[in-house]
Image (cartoon, rainbow, N blue to C red):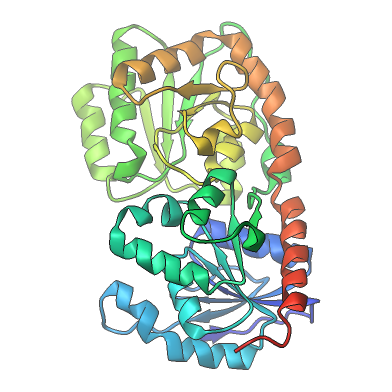
Length: 371
């Protein structure tokens, strides 16, 4: 099924193979369209955006991973019809594999984080990644640590573009939390998925200890996922149900207002690309408490504009949260500094202009070499 939208002719026609239901895909479509691209999204899920042409791919009754192989002929026919200037694939281990199998050029593989940071731990996936990335004319990485991981998979520096996708900065800057004040109630928020890697259970255990220490706080957990039921049960078991509010999935349009009602942002995942959730919280004026790994250290300096967790032990997390609650000077410094940091390096629409130019240059350099 395809949904054709009346999009005027733009200077660059892009076909994007990606999960249309994912907010990161939707935001990138908005950014590139704003930069001047004509976007055609090919996905196994429909795309709820009116600024692009979308094509829902057929799902055959095979194992989930096999659909990336069985759909190749269908995608080739769509590409022949669309005639894009360039093909982009987002998540190398899924749609990236499908894109490589089409043999379309020029091809851009867009790494996301886990596909080059975690997947290569599996020997078979590592071989697949090497093969898939080798067929790309350009590979993008949101951050230097992702670029390093991609280079270890055989991608040469001259085939790479390192730049964060970014967030819609103006949207999140429009509703910031008030400047931190001495003696104010301090509320925390997590906006990560309710899945095991995000360690929301560890966060609940940490706030249970804070409650025992008579530290005053409120925690909002915004997100959904398969662990929601067990986390609700754990909160009740730990006796913190009155201190925790589960609000479920929050639409993008409502997220800035919700963030602005809080003072501290916390995430406990121990591997990441560039976290949009972190950039959103920074823009909204919250103090970030995040693990000390490369995805976060490029944005956060411990004790300056946030708190970096040296390790994810329960005691360390509890002490960090208590420090953030009690140190109004640190919260005020983060409130002041982080807005400028994201404005300069993490604005979706500014960065989309750079991506757009790089894609245009790529189509010129590879013209006549498509197979």
